[in-house]
Image 1 (cartoon, rainbow, N blue to C red):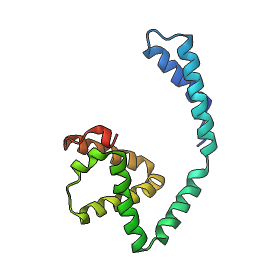
Image 2: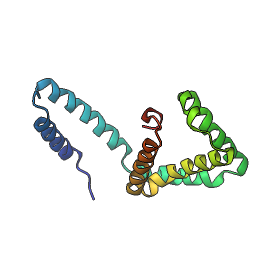
Image 3: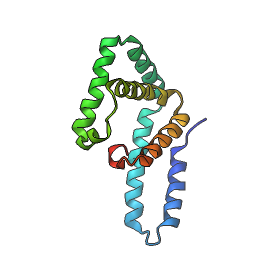
Image 4: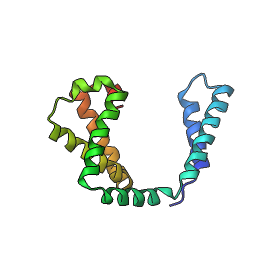
Length: 140
């Protein structure tokens, strides 16, 4: 169906007014500015996910084993560079780490194919990691 972003803004502002007891004109201006920017970005992306999904699927299907190995290694190099503490939690075998990296790559395409299911799956994955005692700043 059609998405009416201005209607969402009205509902969002009404909700915020009812939730924030000291809501004032500065809040109104700030949240209106924020929503107008979000709306502008969303409108710019409308219709593009299908093309992005196709491009990503084409890219993934063109990767040979050598390219996949580079991606597997780069996932961890980038993650550990951004979050060095993460190394303390990845004590699995290389085979297991590569399996996790492959799942991560597959999930990026699945976000286009089945976004609702992926929200549930990623939320459940996050909760499992909380249960494992992994700090949320490493995955949140």
